[in-house]
Length: 534
Image (cartoon, rainbow, N blue to C red; front, side, top):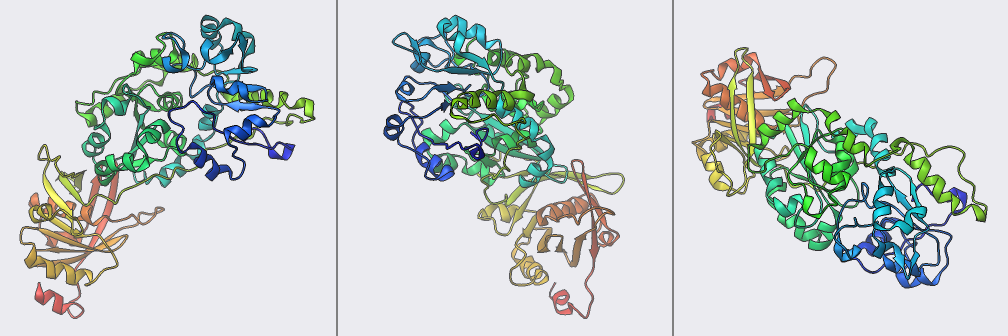
């Protein structure tokens, strides 16, 4: 709709036509976005307009007093929805039942994203072919225009310091990723090392409409507690595509767009049961690499990265999306043709690049407990891997526990080798907290209390240190996660190193990221009472 410029004297209104099982809340959502310009269906059908635009076609639209232009619903026309089409062979949006009423084609223009869709339309509704026009895919073009914002989006998602982003995409229906593998978001977020990967989820708006916002978030409570970010259905999924490194998806359009953006794409399910077998989406399902949800997820991602060749899927992508770089121009030109008789002049220049808005994910609190493994390398650096702990999912022992003092799971803290207070502004002071907790947590080899974003107090048996990250030349001051610090120190001790050696400094490795940490002992006359108590 932004291709229709208000400065050209165009007034834009919105309405929701009857007939969708997923329309609940849509009217209210539109009102929250565009304000007073939302009409009831009754109001919309009583007024006259120069143009009506729809992202899907439905027989009720014949009641509008306006020429109708329908757009592809997502990336092309692929899905078989017999409830809408009335048959089992026509893809939704191109069936005679949707396009024709009493022998007359309802839309004035049927927008296609590729020339090959003309052949499909000729098969399903030949009388509508003269109304078809290839306009490309403005949504795909906007994703391409947003590539320069990738670092910006990743920062908003917290994917910095060498972490990489896996985005889980699911359409709706029983054949979708969520329909077939509802545990996959939780399995991914608990299978991937937390300091090397972040996981976000994008679900089709119909998922939210069918189950409601509170219900979806309730079902995602455990994965969100383990670090899963959830992208709201209204906006942010396109930015997540741009920000992603891997995409795990299904036959939904967002997965297809991700592959079009040359993101490393794996399919957890193909949805082939509800696709036109001749459609590019079906070919995509047969061609794209698969992910086995029951297998080693971490190993599969790394293997897919090694084997990735974006050229494999390029022919499939190109058979669905044509003229992507000109999509905005083609679509805008056709829209303005409807208005030319009212003196509305097509803009002289094509639409400017239109990067998509920033993502604003729903997040839970950061994980409060991790399983940890690692080693001290030959160069003295400490390599750490952490996996978030989720109640009821300790299926394999990976190593020791590092648990936040704020964790509600008291049994984990009692079994932990590392306990850390992660809140900076708290009483008592970090040194006092470490000393006071020592007799209460005899099983903990390392206690840590945050001072600020870059420093913490560390207590070993009989020793107190202040730890602070070392800012590299030309770089920013690295953050210091108290639980990660405690885990690194415990690995240091487990591999035969002494606490006294920490004053020489430590290098902590998490994946490709390295952080240098300096340790200092307290001055006697400044914390003598604390040292005496320890």
